[in-house]
Length: 469
Image 1 (cartoon, rainbow, N blue to C red):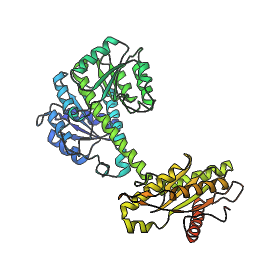
Image 2: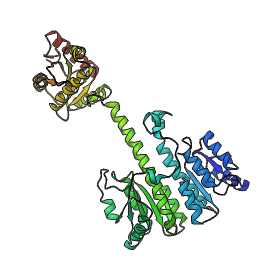
Image 3: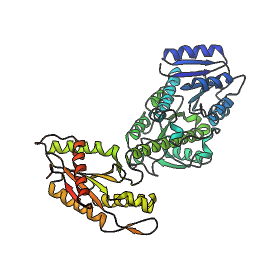
């Protein structure tokens, strides 16, 4: 099955018809004959999407929507509201209450299924965090929020909406209309200007593109949408396609090509603004999730104290450096750098002083290495350095420079006092391609043994592994 669809409709014939059509499309239908049952099933059965009739006898459709969006367990479920009335007031109430779309009866089956596929795809994209981090992902990642009515306008920071059409007068009419209903920035763009936006995301990238379906030529807006989706700077922006009329074929094609919303031009006066507010809110939430995950991934390989790489990153990276050296037939060096008598720093001055020493030593090491080199903290006071394409004489010079840079100036402690610290260094040279292949863990062990020799020799010394020499 493609997904579980909750059908909330108090007309038995409608429920049976939807059940048959959705089953034929390989969905699993769940049926509710009134709003109260629908709310209970939405919470207990966790459907992937809800089809909600707005003319229920027990509860008004907008009230069901508000309750769904106020419940943390159900507010992420997309809802398509179904209306027997084409009136703008009913549609507007449903959109304001949190409906993802409002479709009027009689329904076009192809358009309904395309919109369902579109919303299910968007929901699946949002679920990847939960799959990666477990069911507690929202609270773990700081994204949990208290229950609140669905009303994106007051809570969403002002965004930017780009109006893209080949007719200037139409763009200006949209802008004039939206300016009265939205506080977001509105810019008029041509196709060329939209495609010329910078490749990196910044404040100039619109949150939403409103694109005329027949931009410059029939289907031109859909082609532009595909182009925007393939560009690094605009691929996370939402797109709303405006069709000239009730064009179900274009609607189906737009949704299946990835449009976030499709709206008939005749409905723009009443529905464009609330739909854009929903798109901006949804896009900002996706941005927050993506940034949180990216931060989590970054922190999983970064030592939070010093800001350099940690062991989890260092060993696979070292294996990559070794593989590259083997393919090129080049040398590379590995160093293990350890602070001398670091325990006494913590014992005498406290852990805050110890942290300050670690941060400063990491900074001095980092500033005296090349961009291609790797520096990682692999233990409490132990650092790993990898030097690709480095010969033995070059490794000797680098190791001695690092040792001197650490010891030549005192580290300023939080108390303001200065403390001289030193490091001991063990160095091992990676094997050439013509020599016996060596596992990176063995190479690190050789460097570590050389480090122990440096400690035994009185500390503040560089020692090379016998194999490297």
